[in-house]
Structures are given as structure tokens and as C-alpha cells.
Length: 453
Length: 131
Image (tube, rainbow over all chains, first blue to last red; front, top):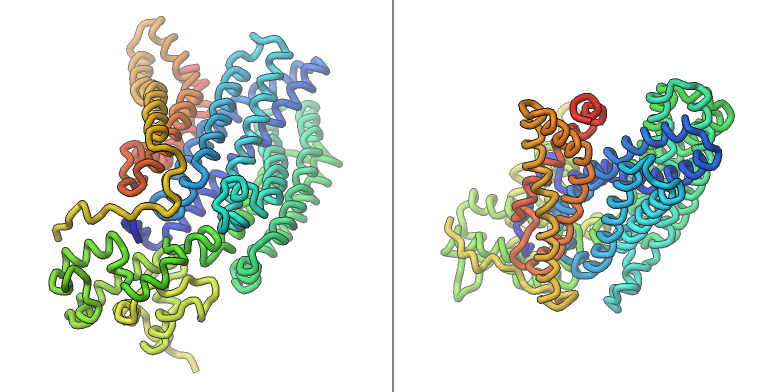
């Protein structure tokens, strides 16, 4: 509201963030678990003096650096840059609260890069002890970066006592912190094993070596899967009541939850039957199937974790449409257009006749020609609603949701969205502005489908 | 439609600044200075390395291969050193700054959509071409 709106046609901006975020977490978890894999396995290879395994680990380290250090960094900044555009008020709130959390994370990122650089580029030129130490420094730094970012993302789902105290540590160690750290640590272990199977299946021709790699990566995968389950249970227990209700109410989330449970069981079964009992099963096809199944579970889990926050982007702090809960009463009285920095400047410049004594006269807005009223309704839609809804086509397109509705039904919804659906934010404008939005929505809502009895 | 730019400055945050203003600006400048080094090596270095690899002497080709071999880490450092100025700029100038204003933002978006493919494709291309 105090920033220009960023309208993403068809997809909506939160869905764009979801896509980028999922692509990032699939790699960032590998960056953590893979670091631990390299540390543990390099130690094992040195201890057993297994030169073939050591050579494989060097090959894997190059793959690991390209995927995590470069791709992971770019997608990570991609998320940040996109949330800054899509949810500027929520981003402002997060960086004001956690600026030093991110600064600490940055220190660990630099440690990660430097240790990864020394670990890979000085391979064979360092004493085994120093070489292994570099791997452990990397693994610890990567896990610390997971811990730090989890404190911030978990805060968005349940900020706990921070809402009253505004205390950094209470916000960071919020009720969701421990469950999500457990789940993400498990996810990192599981996902890194799936990457290892995939890489080894395509790169290693020696079957004995491939079997060794497969069997050594199974325990971390199984432990990781158990941690994910444990963390997932904790995540559910510490969800706010509205998030639990959203999980039960939204049919798309029901489908995702069934998918998560079914595919998690499938991953367990494949790990048991494959790498644990029959390491020779880890062919490129099997590894791809296991990798794809694991990635699907992860992606669905991340989507559900994000989606249950509605109507908030930060629970009880910022609504999904970039309004603070405490601003709603004022905006209902003063007007959304007048209260918004950009909407007010635009309307004053575009329709100078609606301003009286320096204020936008709400009644005059309804005296404008009908096309102008619809145009204002469209602007209100873009600021107030487009964070969750596309217009006529696309993700949760409002026109499709209102198909066949009468103007009176639409008016009621606009004035009381939170009463129709608890996961929608309340209307934050005057009755006149509600009328402008209604007129716009009526103009784009298609009629009830024909041919129905 | 002509709008008055001063009307577009948002209200102050109820949370205030998390640190003194001078502290935020100092770290912004320091972070940006660190960011510049690897970014120059990344953007200009790749071009120079490509030219030297194609038309350079044996020594120039060796130098080009060496730089390209280290490019993943240079890129990672460039991005990570960029976090500091972006973070402190967002905190210090939040009333007038949107991430879309960031000149580096365009590079980040371009990188995001193009470098992913380049990295994956370059995984073994590097061994073939330069390394």
C-alpha cells in the first residue's frame, strides 16, 4: 500500500515466489546435507585409504560446488529480490527485525565459500587432517546458515511472543523454530543422499564402488526421513489455529497432504529395498525415480508450509495484501486510496476534481463516469486483492471464482471477505471504494455456465 | 498523468531503525566495496577470458583457464558480498527503496533466468573448454 504494487499476470506474485523458493530449497538443503556427506565420507576414505572413493568424492565435490555455491546463491538472492517486490511491507518488517540475523547468516555464507574453495581447489595439496577440517568447517557453516534462516522463516508462520515484546530473540526462537530446524536438518540429510545416488548412478561405472556409495548414503537418508517426520509433527502441533483450519479447509492442501504422506512412504520403501538391501539396484533409472519422488515430497511440503499462513504473510503482523492489522480501522474510515502512498498520489494526479480541501472526496469518486469508476476498481483490485488472485485467467482467478454471482453477492463479499472465508484479509476501505471494486468485479465476472439443469 | 515524486515517499516504519543510521550506511559502503571486486572479475573477467582463450598466446590461454576454473567461487563471492549492501540499503532507505530500483537487480534477474541453464550446461563444458 505504501509501495507500488507489482502485478504478475496469470501467475500472481506469491506463486512466482513459491516457484523460485521451491527451486532454491531443493538445492539449499543439498548444500547443507552434501557438506556433511563430504566431511564424513572424506574422513572415511582417508581412514580406509580408499583412493577410488576419494577420487569419486573429488568429482562429487565439483558437482556440489557448481550446484550449490553458484545456483544456490543465485536462487537465494532471487527469492530476496522477488519478495522485496511482491511483499515489500513484509520484507521491510523482516529486515527491520532480523537485520543482524541476516548479517550473521552472511558471515557463515562467506565461511562456506572460503572453506569450499580450499577443500576443492587444494585437493591433494593439503595434509589429510587439514583437508578434512575444511570439510567440517564447511558442513558446520552450512548448517548454521540453515538454523539462521529457519529462525526467520519460521517467525513468519508463528512469531510467538514477539508480537507483544518486539524482542529479537523471542522472535527468532519462536514456537516453530525447533520443529522446522529438525525437519530441515532431516530434509538436508535425505535430499543429499538422493543427489549422491543420482550423481553416482550416472558417473560411476565401477559397480563395487557404486554399491559402496549407495550403501554408505542410506543411513543418513533414513535418519533424515525420520527427522523430517518428527519435525513435521512438531510443525503441525505449533501451527496457529487458523493455519490448522486452512489445512483442513482447502481442498488443494488436502490433496498435497495426501501426496506428501503417500510419497514419503514410497521413499522409505525405495530406500529400504534399494540402497539398503540391494545397493546394485541404484541404476540411473532407479536413482532418477527416487530423486524425483523425493523432490516432489519436498516441493509439496514447502508449498503447504507457505500456503497455511493465509490471510497473513507474517502471522498477526502483516496481511498477505501488505496491510498491517492495526491499519484496517483507519483505512475503513479514511479510505484505502487516501491512505495508500501510491494510490493517493495517482488518483490526485489522474482525477484532480475528486480532491476537496486536500482530501479525496469518496462520494465524488462515485460521480465519475462508469469507465473511470471501473478503472479505480481495477486499481483497488491490484493493490488489495492481486497478492492472491489473478484477474480473469490464472492462479485463483477472481473472475472464475465469481462466475455467475449477482452484483449483490459480489458486493457482500467485497465488504466482508473475512466473513466469507477466514483465510481472506478484511476489507480495508470505505463503502464507496467497495462499490468501485464491486463494479470492476461485476464487469469481469463471466455468466454462469450454460447447459446446466 | 504527472505525479509529484515527493508524494511517493512512504511513512516511517513503526519498528524504527534496528541500528544507528551511520552504522547501516558504513556497512553498506563497506559491503559494496567488497562486492565490486568479484563482480568485476565475473562480468569483465569472463569476457576477457573468452577473448584470451580464443586469440591469446599459450600463456594467456593458461591464465584464461585458471580464471575460469575459479569462476564458480568468484560468482558465489560476488553474490554473497552483494547481500551486505542490498540488506543495509533496504534497511536504511526503505521509505524510498524497492528492490526493483536496485541496478544490480536487473543482473540478478538475468542471472536467475539464464545462469541456471549455463551452470548446468557448463558443468562438464568447463572441463572440455577451459579447465
